[in-house]
Length: 482
Ligand code: ARG
Image (cartoon, rainbow, N blue to C red; front, side, top):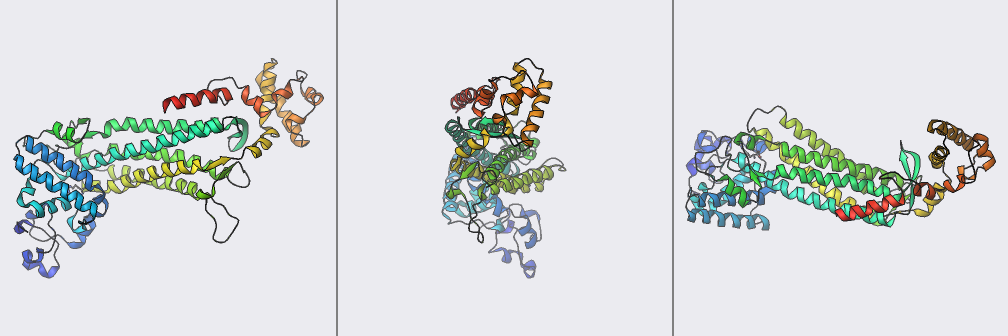
């Protein structure tokens, strides 16, 4: 290795007096020349982020190639140097991909791994790559490139889930299930209406990602450490080479802003919250007590001791992972809350929460979608249950409203009927007309046609309701959107 004199390395204590010798088989740190003692090995191990940011090697190389290309085009380095640097970087990408080069923690971070390897390959020219650049704008660039990919992956996963939901809504549009409030049976609804409620949540999640993409896709490259550079950098050109839509407007903000990570993790958190609610329904509904839904064997687990068990572990895991993603959001907000401008090393701690939430959200949406495809509503059981349930009481009240009885009175009268029905163990449709008329003279034969779940659903007239007609319309709109 050349330029050993400027190397700072980790050396055992007994080598302190023979600095250069001790460094011969150690890694070079990028900032070592200013120091007279080697960096403490424990301190380096503690501060190294290679095990985390090693994941960004493709983004780092992509960013470096764009920077080196711009340097060459602007005449800041020669075209030949630029070409050598770019060729070397492309080879390093292949080396890391194939496992020929395994990033080591001694290199402090992935940026150093790559630059040190480049120096081994092309010599002193490698040192020109960092002209007008700092690891501060470099890591901000890498992170934005990573987020761009993950935002698109999450959008794709959400789109696939939305398609499944439309399929489910279509398949079960005429099936009747209970709608709940307070986890108490409320009214019969079309199962299609239920699935489309979730469709709307995931649609908003996708809109949120589209919106934040406008802020993700801005290049911070060219901000250097935080104040810019005396070199005639062309930030627009490197941004264009990286496919960014625009460039930063303030170099301090460019290196020290982590809003977009927080926004992204919060978007992931909202998606996880939606999934978790859906999982909760699936877990409850697949229980023996509810028995509304069945998850196929391929997405169920058993018990090591109770042979009869069939558990909804995938749904439970997604519900559990939701807690972890919320933790990532809280971690990120807390990391940032006390930081003075501009870059602080604290910010290196942004990557574990970012990677964790992005990967967890994408995996969870993908797995949830596959599990959902392997569920089926137990229509026969639900038909039986909904037919003899009290959840038609609202229909009785609205029936009386149509007979010109004020809703408040109708509600009170119906409450009395429900109470009688419970005391006498007689389902609402089985009560005789004579009995109904004892409560209110306005009842006639037509009450019995209103007292079926189908009639209840069909007769819903308001916008966006659970009626079969409304569900049909919603399905058509959803298909149009997809
Ligand atoms: N590993 C660092 C990070 O992820 C890179 C930036 C280092 N910059 C510095 N001034 N020490 O944040």
